[in-house]
Amino acid sequence: MANIPAAVVTGATTARGIGRAIALRLAENGHPVALLGRNLVTAREYAAEISDKYGIPAVGVSCDVTDPKSVDEAAGEVDERLGPVGVLVNNAGITDPGRFVDIDVASWNAVVDVSVAGTVNMMQRMVPDMMRRKAGRIVNITSVSAQNGGGVFGGAHYAAAKSSVAGLTRAVSRECAHAGVTVNAVAPGLIDTDIRGEVDPALIAEVVSGIPVGRMGTAEEVAATVAFLCGIEAAYITGATIDINGGLYLR
Ligand SMILES: NC(=O)c1ccc[n+]([C@@H]2O[C@H](COP(=O)([O-])OP(=O)(O)OC[C@H]3O[C@@H](n4cnc5c(N)ncnc54)[C@H](O)[C@@H]3O)[C@@H](O)[C@H]2O)c1
Image 1: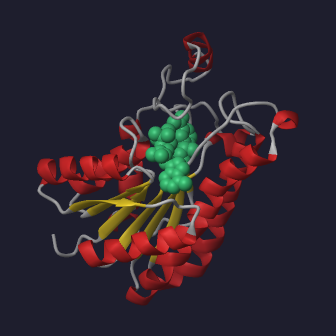
Image 2: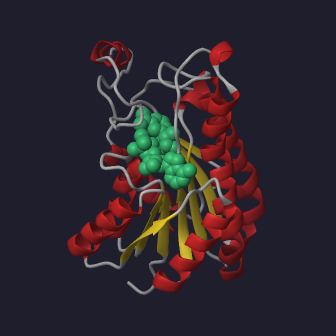
Image 3: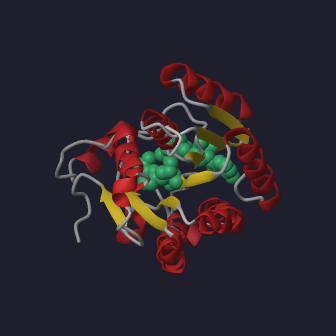
């Protein structure tokens, strides 16, 4: 167990979210985990659940990924409580549907900030330590929206933000590879979480009818792929974006 590094997952504070599922899966694989998010109450609650279930150290830490000071404080707390971090999963994200011409500046900035600035802030804080220790795994969450020019549930700002995350992943992977740090992304398709808020079930059914596998994906299915990329066996995969979309978008 001593060789399994501590992991940080951002945006891991929603009940049915992908972040919580990733934290659970990483703990199952033996990683001590820190669940970061803006809701400290649920971060702590889900961390306690993980400790109970797997007998692994798990902590909930308050963090707004768009704020470099908050990121720095959260990272310091994780170092203190779990030791050096070897795995970072940038999962925090928000979406907003609507037509490009209707997107206002506040919405544009909010959507781009969480995915892009959030991922940048976390990586800038954690990559130097990983490179010094010559070991690290980073997984960023992009989206099928980045590949397909948006979609039903995310506007142009969401597609632009997630495209940035994919480009950033490739760029940072080049700089880190020689130091044993891999940087990859996963691109989920339609996953059954609450990110979209209240959506007309008929609209969901229409999208599902275009998915070759014939259903939405689960948070656990995304988590399984993320956990693989965080493991020792994925050492030769870097700069990649892995699709998890049931065939919704093929390339
Ligand atoms: N659900 C899908 O169909 C789908 C598809 C493709 C990509 N994604 C991506 O997967 C990731 C997880 O989404 P989800 O579906 O689990 O939704 P979710 O809403 O359950 O999870 C997103 C999490 O990010 C957190 N967050 C938002 N702003 C934050 C901030 N400033 N600082 C810290 N945390 C913040 C939220 O509180 C939440 O916990 C997101 O990046 C999303 O864009 C989801």
